[in-house]
Image 1 (cartoon, rainbow, N blue to C red):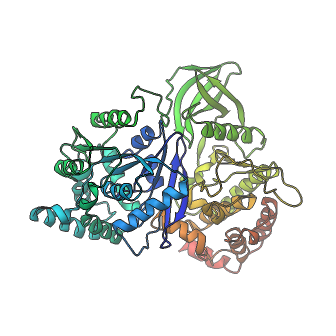
Image 2: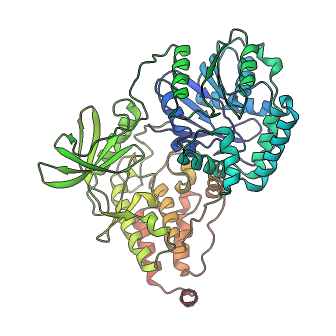
Image 3: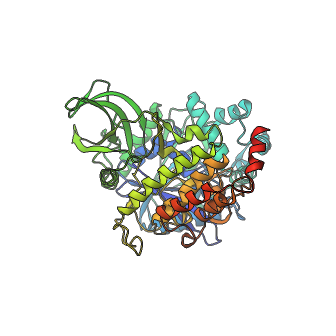
Amino acid sequence: MEQEIRFCTAGDGVRIAWSTVGDGPPIVKAANWLNHLEFDWESPIWRHWFAELSRDHRLIRYDERGNGLSDWDVGELSLEAFVTDLETVVDAAGVDQFVLLGISQGCAVSVAYAVKHPERVSHLVLYGGYTKGWAKRGKPEDLARREAMQTLALQGWGRDNPAYRQLFTSIYVPGATREEMDWFNDLQRVSTSPENAVRLMKTFNQLDVTSLVSKVKTPTLVLHAREDAGVPHSAGRALAAGIPGARFVTLDSKNHLLLGHEPAFAKFLVEVRGFLGVSTEAAPARSGIPRLASGQQLGRYRVAARIGAGGMGEVYRAHDDSLGRNVAIKILRNSGSDSNLDARFQREARAMAALSHPNIVSIYELATAQGLVYAVTELLAGSELREKLNRGPLPRDTALQYAFQILSALGEAHARGIVHRDLKPENLFLTTRGDLKVLDFGLAVVRPPTTDKGISSVETRLTAPGTMLGTCGYMSPEQIRGDDVDQRTDLFSFGIVLYEMLVGKHPFLRDNAADTISAILRDPAPPAPWLPSGLERVLTRCLAKDRDERWASAGELETGLKEASSRKGPFGALKRWLQRA
């Protein structure tokens, strides 16, 4: 299942990132400390929450101001500002009535919202929450520990310090595996800055909704882990006791954030689904990934082994028994459970099938068997371009060789009305024979073919206006804004890839996704004076913020790149000297 990320703006101008996934009655998850829409989506700390909550519902969640993909440079951090952000997201999502889920300090925000808007909240689910922050309810020794944590956060936030990591994991996820602990540590690094982490902690410590809980009129379920060290069980019990008619459930766990492999999470789901009147019987996980066994037969294909995963499914190496050839099979995640995802998967297959080009992966068949939807493609041997880029810049001749192959593939796609929208090194595959293949047309937009006037503005659209789709570090400004796209969108992404190949670093990469997005929207690419001036001009035009200032087509860009690469720039001697040094 794919999430769709969008942006909205609160009354004080703060940009809030929010996402939606799944179908059915809406559940809105109030933001909590340390959220990142993209990172959380794949995290073993959170992915089981999203999978199960979106099984029967449309799940709407967002990054709190000050972290994740939302603005980091914010003025006000307060309960009132958090409630305003929730109001802004709900309005942007266009939902009139919904289930409101609060986790940790998100419970206080949810209580305040439910009191302010009782007509919009059908059910209130609160897990791991409290009415008063640590500064309002803690004992002296507890307050001293929290002060120490704030100091440590300011000094060690996001650093790979085992002692620092252990302090936080021992509080929030003491039962985590090593993988889960590593993800939690990385979440700190990518979600916010040290300064914002301390500001948020101080704000949460001062929260107090004691005067509001008795005013909640919404049916409420409160759940809490028995041995929660992050927020004590007594705080959850006090929260439930203050809400008229609330039901309180204790879960046998030590974890503040319930992990997918512990029985407490299964009980959480049973209780919540029973409260919401949803069937508690096992159902195919909407974001589960079908796994095939070695030797399993799928139609005329015999599965050999799993070789990876794409944005929409699992990829296997298999053998075509009829034609006697090895192939790759891409199995759609949640086959048949999400009509939008099914349509995207079929769109990718049809887009690829329409393209017969040596630099685009070939598709042989789109089929169904055993309740699964899958695409069969050529089996490639080699590695992603990313692996080469991880070792530094490429020799100029090599970079240009790859660049011309990419442009040739894009020219073919654009001529058939297909805009890739997710061009990046991970979707560019280098075969052992030295060819480059463009992969993954899962986010492709299919438009009428190119005419003399360019690509028509009419689009086969499976996502709503304002939706941001793609990989944030490689999206064009118009993609980030959720605007209409055309072939020049791909040329911006190509410019980033070309810059990486020639210079050895991403032109807009910053310490976090929010700053990277801001750089794409506002900052020019750093100059590379050791490149021939013609190549620099090519890059500058590729990376223009205004698409009207970019190259008009892949063909025009290819011609410009050939002309620029055939000239010797004034800095050629300098670069050769630096290479020898």
